[in-house]
Amino acid sequence: MKKKNNTSFQFKQFSIEHDRCAMKVGTDGVLLGAWANIENAKNILDIGTGSGLISIMMAQRNKNAHIVGVEIDKNAALQAQENINNSPWKDRLKIIHQSIQNYTQETLFLFDHIISNPPFFSVQENKIDARKIARQTLTLNDLDLIDTSIQLLKKEGKLSIILPFTEGNYFINEAAKRNLFLSKKTNVYPKKDKPIERLLLEFKKSETKNILNDSIIIQKEKRNDWTQEYIQLTQAFYLKM
Image (cartoon, rainbow, N blue to C red; front, side, top):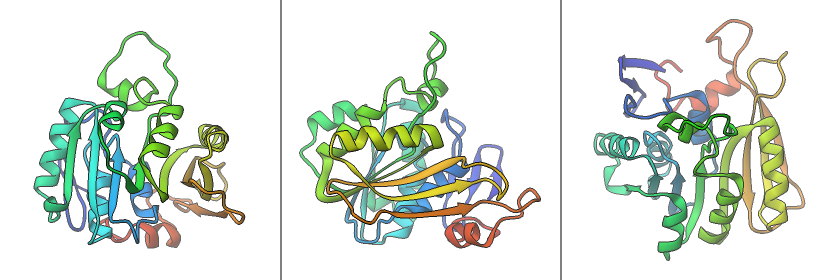
């Protein structure tokens, strides 16, 4: 991924400005955006869209999909809208500045796919700022995301998320209690000799007998020496892959 300037990242078909977003462009978002199985989705909801990165990736990958990105932070929502306006797919993208809880109460629309790179750090301080909201479960906890997905997904719809190992396994258990079931899991290793760092998870409303379970290693021994599997997954986006 190449920096265009101090405030943006240039991908192959679009660029992302993120200087007004609490969470910057990172590997988690790109991984999730490239991994989620959205092939047959006509309507996609991106919860906590931030800079709009994942929403724009969805539009690039699926030429028939319409994507709604919901973002609670005003500055991030405004910047996401600017990024979308500068993308080749602005006619199929929409940003809504609202909490997902309020959006869920107000909308009657159902989605084929919901995608989210959710906050996962527990609250440790009383001071609240935009970065904490983006990184911690202040405004979107596991149960909110599970309940929202159950309400807004179509019968055959899917939820795709990325979480750290411990938080991901907790989410799997909590989702199953509410009849949202794991259908696919990819273990993400930073290097082959390191422990699992992230879980890419897909859920459905109906229980799956044979859960797809695989792994991906991000890089080899040297920094930025990417594995072939990571290159294959992300090469449609990164400039130098």
